Image (cartoon, helix red, strand yellow):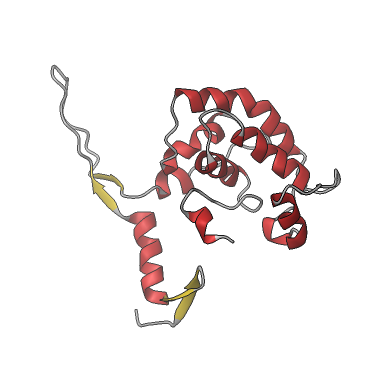
Amino acid sequence: MGSTGNVRVAGEAHDAEEAFLAVVGYAFATRPLAWRAPTGGVGDAPTTAGVGRWAYASYDCVTAASGTGLSGVDLFIAAGLNGRLDNVGIASLLAVEPEVSGALGAIPPDTTFWGLPADAVAAAGAGGEVPASSPLRPMLRAWTAFMGAPGLDVAITHKTLHHKRPRVFPLLDGRTAMAYP
């Protein structure tokens, strides 16, 4: 495969072939299963040759539950992307789930983050008033319910919301958020 030009990622030019190979590596690279027989175990080692090297199989390939509300897989998907969920975070996810599910259900289905007026998003981010009719209102409510709960941080909040509504919530964590002004 010859060079096909450049692609821009976060404002930087990258060779298109290298970018393609990086994505393929993320999706399909494997590592050996480091299985060890427990003391007193029964049977042979699993026949699995390897496991996914990155989170593609444990996050990107997992389908969100149907409907607008959060359930099972939606609540624990952040762990598939190294969300570091502990007992406090899990209890918080379960506690605020009804509030977040209600907010997600109030976001019009055709809403996209990039389709929102930039000035309205900036004003909301600065603590400005958000009209009740704006799709930003339930978006911010879902985000606020998660972010205010103990044990839930920007990574778990965005990994959970992005998985459920990827066109509405950007995938942010402590590192990627620094790339935004």
